[in-house]
Length: 87
Length: 87
Image 1 (cartoon, each protein chain N blue to C red):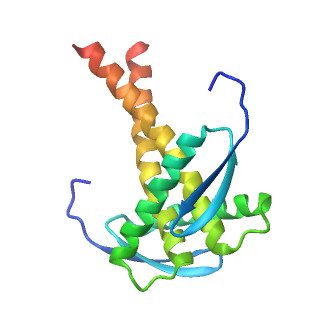
Image 2 (image 1 turned 30 degrees about the vertical axis):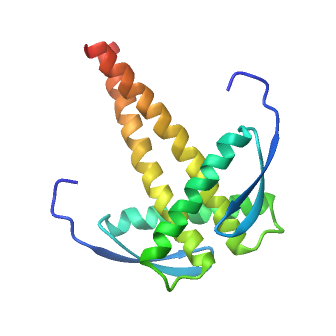
């Protein structure tokens, strides 16, 4: 972001626990990110009901990291393609 | 992937605990994803030493989700741009 990076403190609820998240993102953005993590944890839990919350959170992180890497790879490919077309 | 989607079972170690991950990705991919999550957890822990492992894992998931959304947004913008140029 180009504007001045003010720190925000946002309190969110994820999987029944309250977290205070400090960062430069807007509170509304943080809340939406937290809601997505909460949803993903519940989704993974529904297929793996034997997991404790710690294991569930770690596997949720693995799941999101996997999606992130796929998206990043696709982005890099596209950026490469655009660069090739420009030269 | 275009090839037949075989299920793999991969055992990984994340933040001192063993997880068996079943999926259609290769074991080597899963291991690299797990290593990135492990690294991210340790990085976040170094700034927030008061967190227990469950809280740490949840905040790691939030952190990765945030990065993922940024990457996805950038990808969508680029795809939109390419679509506009093609028409």
